[in-house]
Each structure stands twice: as structure tokens, then as C-alpha cells.
Image 1 (cartoon, chains in turn yellow, green):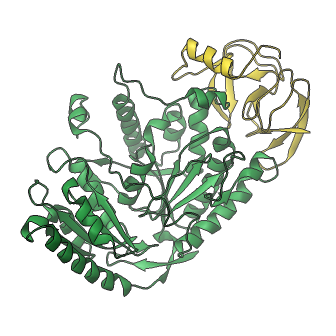
Image 2: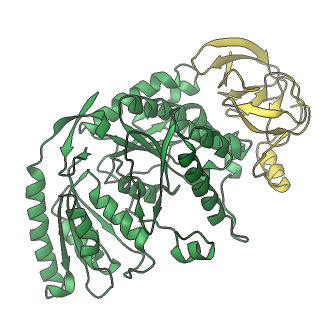
Length: 112
Length: 389
């Protein structure tokens, strides 16, 4: 089963440890190597990238490593890809053309 | 916990027994290298920036700090003689720690050949003195380790940085000291670092150096690259996420102090624990900053890129399966497969630190060293920005 890691129990995202295809059940592990309840991803998630552990609302913080790492800009459903298209930094934001460039380089299409 | 090191006259303890040949101006670099040629343990650092003293005090403090570093057994400082940096400016404060520290001016010695010959005899004298020093068992409170990332990628925050954080905690638990730097890369993590400060005095100082560093790198028209497209393609969404992943290498202990480097001097830790210092994020020069702050080795997390330094052994840690090579000292790839934890690999790293302190060579020790580039903040720009102290 494909694996993803949840760095702390406060986190609302998991990070893919390998490329994960859309619709696959994902084994979640924590930092100590314990297995957590699995969930399925609704979009393909490249290794090193994140998906939502539960439904996230616009305005909520992105929580990874147990700390706030930015703000969710649009509602995200469980299992969906969480990245520059639906999260902004609270410190120094990435300019819009660069966000487009990042998603193009990743060949990202919503829902795929 | 103990290790076997070389005890210096000031009570500091080296994990290597090297000679330092300092060229205080660029013109004597070749002469220094000719002097160093016959000694495997001789390291040359040259000031390529200028032969003038005014405005370069921070640079000179860095060189003096390297000379005082306990990995250095003896120092020879060479000047051409026409510049304004008297070699004794460097040699004298090092000598005052009780360490053998000599100086010479090429122009006083009747030409290049005679200067090289004279320098060789001084280096031979230092080498014979260094050879008399033998390893002695000392407590881990005598060990200071720098922690640094380079060539970060998605595996850094998940694997190699938490591994270093575990080892950093364990070094401190056993009485040792850890120094972290790269102040510009604290952006987005300021709140968490300030919360970790031991007291308000430390907190105020950290806040000041973080704001000063952001000001330095925020000049209109000269953008600072703190988040690359490659970082984001690899999975990092915000600067906060990148920074928080990087801060894992500092472990979990409180920040005991903040070490400043400026024209007035270079601060060094005064008791064990975790310190944050003005160590540049540029790898080659960071080793000089770490050495000047007293670190005897560096833990360096990377995808697969290379950085090695002759003064302070560099222990490399990587969790990147695609880029991993024999250059890495610690293999964190199993963490990325979900087959090992960062604590387990962190134990291996801690054991490696003790081995290297005892004299075991790192994976690439003696090979492919980076130049010892000496970094300083531009004093004139500091003045323009109102940051001169």
C-alpha cells in the first residue's frame, strides 16, 4: 500500500512518501512509525506533496509539523491535493505567475 | 559521555590537530600554499577580499576566530607587507590563548623564494610542536557542533533535519553545545524560535538579528531567493513550511543564547546548550563562521549535494533516494520509505558524531574541500541601512 507520513497529531495534512495515484487507499504513518487509519486520495499526489486529512475550510490554517504553515484559500475536501493553488503564505506569498508556473511544471489538473 | 581530543592551552579541545596558514592578503596566497605543501595537516585560508583593514574588521575577527578554533594546533600568519593588515593583528590574539601563533611579512624577507623558505621552517617548527599533543579523554561538554542544511528538498524536513534534531538534543542532553545559523531562513518561523528562547534578553536579541537580516536582504530591485520554484515542485507550499522543516535540525531544547558576528568581534557560547548565531546560509563561508564560533564539526543535511571543509569535519546526512551517494555519512532513506524513524537514524548519527570526534574520518574527509571563503557583512551597506553597531 502507498505510504504517507503525518508529522504530528495536530497536522491537517499528510505528506506522500511516494507518488500516489488518484483513488488509491493510502497507509498513514506517524513520525514514530505507528500506523494510523488509512484514507483514499481523490487526486494524484506526487512524492513529497500533501493531501488533506479531513475537509478543510477557507480561512483555516494549514497545519504541518504541528504548526501553522499558511492559510487555506478555498474549501478543500478530504484526500485532495493541498498546495500553492489552495494555500497562501501568511509571511511572503508566492506571486500568481509563479504559482501558475509551479502547477504547470507539476502537470497539475484539478481532479486528476 | 566522553570523547578523545587534543586539549589546547585555553582548555578547549580539538577533534583534529591541524596547522593553519593564513594569508592576510591575496598577494601572499601562493606563498602560503607553497609553505603548506609539505604538511598534510596544513590548511590555508586567504583573505581574497582586500588588503585594507578599515571596514573589514568582521572578516579579520572571523580569521582570528578560526585560529582560536580548537581543531587548530598552531598558526602561521603571512602578509605581503605593503597592505595595511599587520599580520600581528591576527597572530597576537591567537597567541594570547596560549596557542603557538607566528607571523611573517614577505617584504621583510628578501623576496618570494626566501619568504617561502622561511615560512617552511616556521611551519616545520609548528608541526613538530603539534605532533607532541596527544588525544586525551574529555567530557562531551567540550564538544560544539554546528548544524546546517544545504541543497534542501522534500526529504529534508521529513527525514534528515529531524535526524539532526534528535542528535542535537542528545548532544545537549550529554552536556554539549549546538549552534544553528542561516538567519535569513528563519523567515516564517520567527514566532516559534522566539517562543523557544530561554529568557527575554535572548528573545530581544534574536528578534533584533532576525529583523536586521531581513532588512539586509530586502533591498528594492535586488530580490532575495528564499523559495525556489524547485522547492515548490518538490512539495513545499509556503515559506513557513520550508522554514519549519529546516528548524527541525535545532532539536527541541531552549535557545540559550544568540551569537553575533560583527566588527566588534565574534561571540562564542559561554555555557552548554543550543545557540543561534549569525552564520551565513552560504555553505562554504558558513564553515568559517561555525569555526570562528568554536564548533569542531558540522552536521550537514542535504539531498545529495556536496560541501566539505578542511577545518571542521562535515558529517553529511541525506534521505534522498535518487541523489544518495557514498559521500553521505548517514543514510536516512529508510525514513522516506516509512521503514525507520528519525529517532532511530538520529541514534546512528549521534554515534557517528562521537566516532568522528574520536578521530574517525568522515565519508569524504581529505577530499574535495571547499575553499575557505571568508564572509562578512558589507560594513558600508550596514551603515546605509542603519545596522552598524
